[in-house]
Image 1 (cartoon, one colour):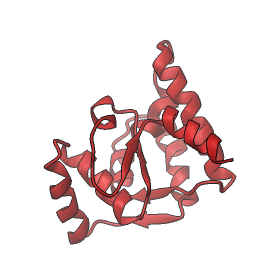
Image 2 (cartoon, one colour):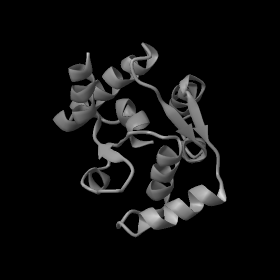
Image 3 (tube, one colour):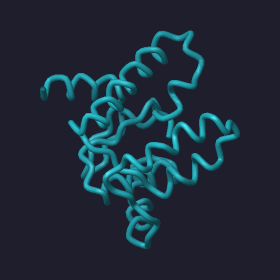
Image 4 (cartoon, one colour):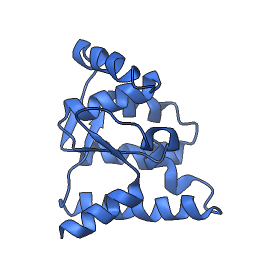
Length: 138
């Protein structure tokens, strides 16, 4: 959810501005169907908690664009518990478990604590490094 919120964050820091630009580049690639997006019940949950209605609505649009949706399940919850063993908090572990369940190759985040984590089955990346990967593919 942090990536979805990045354009709405204070843009006075260079890192935030660069991550915003990279995130917008990634979204453009999704709209062009160069890459695909997965959505999850965790994204629904966290977005529902957003106090800013305008931001919440702007983020919710991406659910309809996603090519896969991950509902809550015993399998996802069990995978999330396993991911927590890598030092990842419960919500983030469930986000990652959903991405793995959807067959995602990458989990994109601006959360600095997550970017350096290793989880079997998926690569965790920030939007800047992922944008470079996308550009190299084309």
